[in-house]
Length: 432
Ligand SMILES: NC(=O)c1ccc[n+]([C@@H]2O[C@H](COP(=O)([O-])OP(=O)(O)OC[C@H]3O[C@@H](n4cnc5c(N)ncnc54)[C@H](OP(=O)(O)O)[C@@H]3O)[C@@H](O)[C@H]2O)c1
Image (cartoon, rainbow, N blue to C red):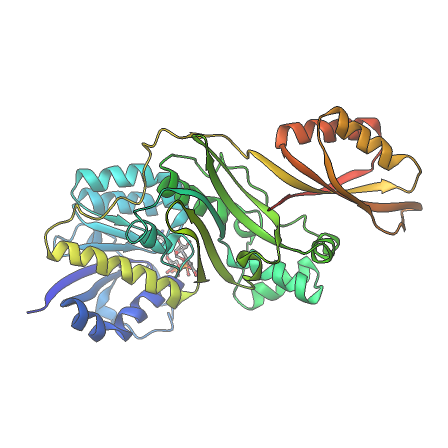
C-alpha cells in the first residue's frame, strides 16, 4: 500500500509553480519507484486573485499560514516565499511543530541556518535546502552521500546565472554591461533589482552554505570578501581573452594548514579550465576531494522546473526517511565543529587595471613601489593611449604574483599617494 505524505507549500511564485508542476508531471513515476504518494495539500497564496499560470484547485489555497504550519496532518513544509523574514520565522514554527522543512531560500539559510538546523534536531525533524545552492544541480546531496568518503580541500563555483549570462554576452559579442543587463532583465534571467546578483551577494550566500557543509565552519556572507561584476569592463575581457583567460564571477573556498580562505570575486580563469566553458545562465561547482580528485557539477542554477526538481528531490528524501521512521540518518548539511579557522581572502595572484597619464617613467616608478612592498610583477602591459578630458591617458594592466590583499592595498595606496597614476579601475583574482 502506498504511504500518503502530506505537504504544505508557502508561496506560489516561480519555484512554487515549478515544484507543483514537477510533482504533478512525475507523480506516478515517483510513486512507482518509492511507494510514496506525495501530495501538496495546502498552498499559502497571499493573492489568490492573481493568475499563477498553473491549474491548481482553488481549495488548496489558503491565505492563513497557520493552516499549514499548525496543521498536524501536514508532514513536510516547503518554504518558497524567499527573503530572510518572515521565511525564517515560518520555518522555525514548522520545525518546532515537528514538521520537516524543505527550502530553496539561500538568504534565510545563510543567515539563520545554524538556528534552524538546531531546531530541526531538537524536534526530530529534517531541514533540507538542495535548491538553495546552484538550483537544479544536486551538489549538497552529492557531497553528503556519494562523496562522504572524501575530505575536500577546495571548492570553486559559478553560482549565479545572471552574472554568468552578462559576462558571457560581454565576452562573446563585445556587448556593453548596461545593455546586457537590460537584455537579461527582458529575458527573465535578471531581477528588476539586480543588486544581489551583480554585487555578488547572492553568490556569497551560497558560498557561505558550501563552506559550512564542506569545511564545517561558520562564515557569514557579510564576513566573506565579496566583489561583484560592475567594474568589469570590455577592456578587461579583451585583455583576458588575448592572454588565454575568461572572466567569471567565482565563489572560491580553499583549505590549507587548518585555515580556510574564501571570497567571491570576478576572476581570470584559464581557458583550459572546465569552469571557463560554463556559459550564459548555467552554473557549475568544481570540487577537489582527497580521494575522488577534481569533479565538476554543471547544470541549470535557476528556473522553475530545475529548481522544482531539487525541491521535490529533498521532499522525496525526507518522505522516505519518515516512511522508514528513521529521521536521523540523513547527514546534516551544515556543520560548525571542524575547528578550522577562517583566514579571509588568503594570498592570490591579482590582475590590476589602472589609468595612467601618458608620461615617461611611470612604469619604472610603479615597479619600484611594488618592489618596496615586496610584490613581484608577473606581467605588465600598456594599451594604446587615448584622449580623455583633454589629456592623453592609457590603461595599464599588471598581473602580480600571489600576495595578500592587505599587502596589495598598501602598495596601491603608496602608488596613489605618489601621484603616478590617475586611478585603479579594477582588481580581479587570477586563477592558476
Ligand atoms: N527563481 C529561481 O530560479 C530560484 C532558484 C533557486 C532558488 N530560488 C529561491 O526560491 C525562493 C522563491 O523564489 P521565486 O523565484 O519563486 O520567487 P517569486 O517568484 O517572487 O515567488 C515568491 C512567492 O512567495 C510569495 N510571498 C512572498 N512573500 C510572502 C509573504 N510574506 N507571505 C506570503 N507569501 C509571500 C509571493 O506572493 P505574490 O506573488 O502574491 O507576491 C510569491 O508567490 C527564493 O528564496 C529564491 O531565492 C529561486
